Image 1 (cartoon, rainbow, N blue to C red):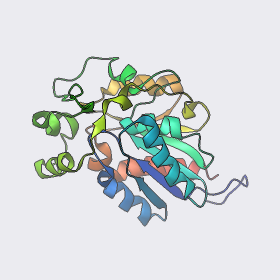
Image 2 (cartoon, rainbow, N blue to C red):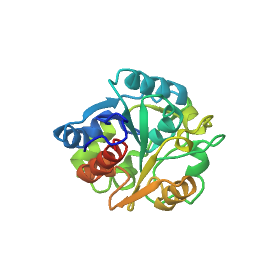
Image 3 (cartoon, one colour):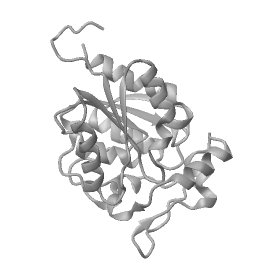
Amino acid sequence: MENQTNSPAVKNIVLVHGAFADGSGYKGVYDTLTRQGYRVTVVQNPLTSLQDDVTATHLALDNQDGPAILAGHSWGGAVITQAGNHPKVAGLVYIAAFQPDNNESALTWFQSAPPAPENGVLPPDDKGIVYYDQEKYHAGFCGDLSKEEAAFMYASQGAFYGECFVTPITDAAWRNKPTYGIVATQDKSINPDIQRNMYKRSGTRVTEIEGSHVVYVSQPEKVAAVIAQAAQELSK
């Protein structure tokens, strides 16, 4: 679309994964957006602390050649909330994601509604790492994927340190950047009502998509459409 306000076109997309996953789950979203001409970068979060994940995200943003949409899934929502103040971020997209405010953590919201019976998030182990119960992973995390896809996601996930979950946000970027959000209506890991409550509070523009917590894997075209819409609208 022709640039009407002299703001540069947004052609860069930076994708941030969450806990119990890695960046490979974004393959479908990547394929869809690159076919549309976007330059897509997938961050591989170390998942060792909020600051470490923010640093990894900032590194990716530093390497963009212009403004970018910063999108995060699940725990990645907390990451983009803190990292999204980067000057190259034109807008934020939350994909079934935590959206804490200042002085809140992801855990603040995770505990704000009873977990689904399928939810398999375990307490931290003696090394401080939080795992997802393997027996519940398919139903609780990615119920609309095949057993084979779920097994690959489980096998390729990063080790998620519990410190991440309890670290508060200090400068919530959604307060200053245009913000879009996706509610995964069949989510068994983050209650959809938690997503709705966070997005309503922040005035986030919401799209509801029928899918599991990993809606970005099971419905990549629909998730990519929300990201592309944000890019197009912020290019006007």
